Image (cartoon, rainbow, N blue to C red):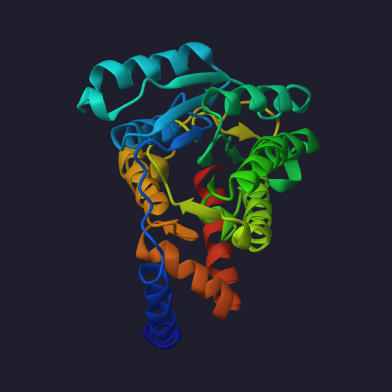
Length: 307
């Protein structure tokens, strides 16, 4: 194992140096004050935490989600519990929408853009998770995960993109996952959707870079939210459990602050995770056989613990 780490280190050091130079040099810092920011999935978890972070930064927020009452709760919390000076904030606007409802999305987005006449930042945060074995997962579950975590995201993006192109400025942020970088056992539906989102984002970034639109993918590791509790099982039922890995993850507030920094410094691809998880990305690329062996052991451990 020591030899493996030595080999990995010989590859990782020069790559890391180049990465840090690109990341921290040459990109202009973005002033967020008065920027119009649309956050999807803003009624709970990371989306709610992002609402607080961007509100404190003085943004004009539009909070979107399916649950109107929860969106109102988040708005009330922002107005009454956030410790900021009144002259630096704007009362949030609310938008009840379902990103998978393609028939209503165009009209909804037109009304959202009309609120301020511009849209500076879109944070695609809405999503669901999954737990299950491929052999026993219904196709409807795969379709549902792709509809919410991929098709819904790009449908929303395509409605906003012409606005940003016309403005000649804007930023589109996709909240992906470490599992969009490397897939792990019993997460096939989730990883597949996040992998697809990563590929779409890379294409979008290249196509819009010279038109003033920035594209960023944020790939968190585990965040301590209800994501695993609300995850879908292979038969379509709810997982209903907060996994130990999820419970021990970073707080939503920590992740939201990282998203805020990502937008401020206009980073293009950010992984919010431990060194071990980041190392997995390099191992999958440089030493795939080792990665497959590690995943085999992980799958066996999961089966043994869930017999």
